[in-house]
Image (cartoon, rainbow, N blue to C red; front, side):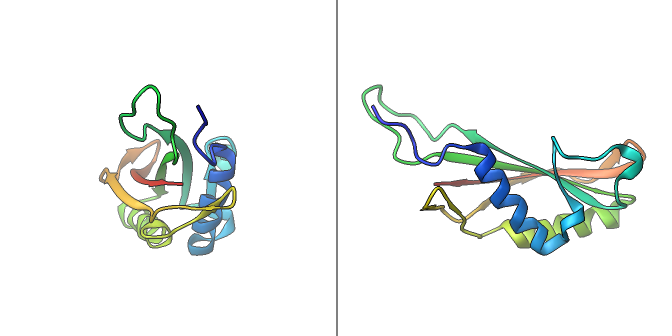
Length: 134
C-alpha cells in the first residue's frame, strides 16, 4: 500500500501562511506556535493552522491517491469591524486559490464554515475553516 502524497503539514502551513501574508501583511499572520505574547500582538491579526483530514471511506486494500487538508484561521481584532476586516482579507487570499505542495497542485481551496466574531480575551475573534486536497 502506498501513502497519500504531500503529507508534511509544515509544508502546507508555510504555503498557506505565505498566501495570507500577501493579503494581510507579514506582521499580522501567525501559526499557533509562533504567536507572540499577548502584550506584543498587533491590533488585528490572524492565527492559522493546517491539518490533515479524513479523505473519505476507502477499502482496506486501496491506497490514497490524494491527501485531504483543513485550514483553520482565527481572525482577531479589537472590535467586530476589525475582526471582520481580517476575515475578509483572509477569505480573499484563500477561497478558490490553488496551491503547490511537494510538486503537486491542489484542488481549489473551498470555504467550509465560520463563526461570528465573539469576545475573546479583551478582543474579538472568529474561526473560519476551508478544505482542499493535494
